Image 1 (cartoon, protein in one colour):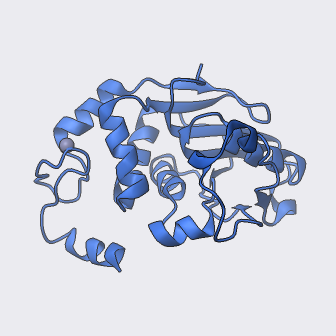
Image 2: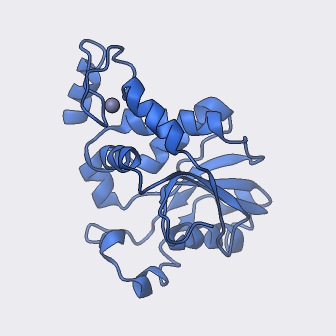
Length: 222
Ligand SMILES: [Zn+2]
């Protein structure tokens, strides 16, 4: 209900900047000019590499305060419009990949219910708006993701390495030979993206997968 009400008032009154709280005069913008500027200054695209995918790109370093606050806003404060806006700006600042579809990493059903949206899907929607690449939001599914799936952040490194099998591809035959960009909010160890890429390659016979993420943690990006 909160999400519906917020959408209703967003066009009526100026809302505070989703990052710093300063008033945003133009209510269609989720961030103030200062925070947009800080994001552009922070932006430092990095090449990301995982075993089952070609070289991908991550756009923002997670350690920057403005980036951290934006990521928290799209993951924990219900600001799906910010995720779409960040996707649009990311697309404007990166080379358009030669792929047939943008594929967001799906959320577990329990977190989708709590959050009301999948931030990776909203981000991919923003990329789609600028690049015009079709969005295939239902391509990846989580067949075993029930209500009690532990949070990624709560898992150990060993657990993260065992997540192959967490994903599957709907309409596998349809995607044979396709080139896909897998979209997620943050690149950390790459294990989630790699599990999804492996399923696409092995089960759906996809020709190529590249990962795209909004942010990256410093530890693993090269
Ligand atoms: Zn701001």
